[in-house]
Length: 224
Image (cartoon, rainbow, N blue to C red):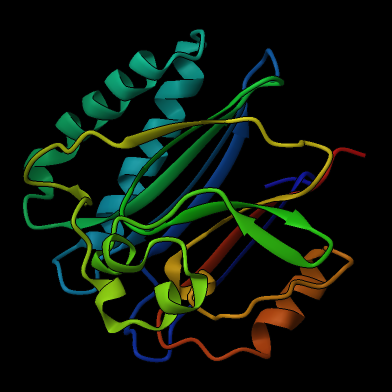
């Protein structure tokens, strides 16, 4: 991580180990790769699975240095999954990948990690979880966060077989901060981040919240 990003994670009080993962890198020609993942608590080796998946995806994306297309990234995701499938048959989790170009931000996701833009100290979420709650109530944030059915996901990253991620082309204001977050964070409704975004201020804010689930945030600072 560098000065462009803030990366913080806290183990949930009801979790034996933290199974979240987050990473950021930049290609030689200035494209940005941001990824966050959340390993399932109830599936074997899921933390290791999502960490390996994200790490290999990042490494192979950097090595390819290819033009960014929906089909190209989907093919790379499928290829990385095939390399890990045999070792993680029982594992599953959520992930969200954001590949940033100047004009378009390419978002790929499975499960309940989310990306949003930060305006002032409020977050405007740009994606919604693949949860039964979202199917029932739509974009009502309070109900999305508080309904117990939000933990029931209908489309996730599974070791045993490949599921094609949802793709969304975003056109966000890169002069404003962006945030990728696991559900341990975004389910703490309502959320208001510090006006001044530094690792210290965000960490202090998180320490004042209570997390039963693992909480991870990966923040892209605004262009200076």
